[in-house]
Image (cartoon, rainbow, N blue to C red; front, side, top):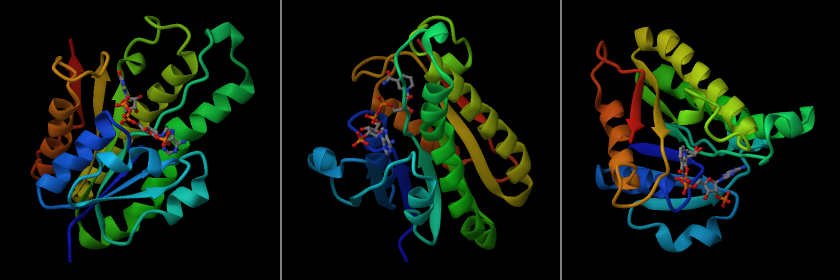
Length: 209
Ligand SMILES: NC(=O)c1ccc[n+]([C@@H]2O[C@H](COP(=O)([O-])OP(=O)(O)OC[C@H]3O[C@@H](n4cnc5c(N)ncnc54)[C@H](OP(=O)(O)O)[C@@H]3O)[C@@H](O)[C@H]2O)c1
């Protein structure tokens, strides 16, 4: 059976780069986003696409195939407004994508990983989790990324003794080809984390300018 990697939040930047990298490493990759047709031209050999809205926890859970060895959560949402102009509704809606979708995917993938005694759960973080002040209109995203980082680090501590590697790739800068934040360079970090040996799992890789 093919080794399976699922990327939720498939798109032209990090999502597609991670999918390409795992496909090149021999994985069958399932890329999921709301509008797969929009991104179909990006999907090379070994990558198939499907539709899911990460805000819909039940749909996310149903989209995780049995036997998923690597789960990458890359979807994000932001109502662009400074913190004083956010509302309970904007925070909740963005949190549902930034963290809720990850939790739903993890809940669906974990039983299979536990049965196999291995697997990786790799979440895409942002520099706003480390310092939320440089870009105030992204306040709701910053709250989500802080929550996602907390989830990654706590899951890491909980699951490492079971041989399951939860971790985060934190991107503290603007993703663009040919820069220190080149998506292909960032994608390599996900595969590196997945290849960490049990007992040597790292919790986080941070890309800084
Ligand atoms: N770009 C940056 O400069 C930067 C900097 C720091 C951190 N990051 C983080 O890195 C990750 C990837 O960013 P990227 O810019 O490289 O994006 P990307 O991987 O090119 O694309 C992400 C994809 O997520 C999909 N998506 C968005 N909302 C979704 C939802 N509700 N359900 C399912 N899929 C959804 C979108 O496709 P659909 O519209 O088809 O759903 C989008 O194409 C994000 O978590 C982001 O916060 C990015």
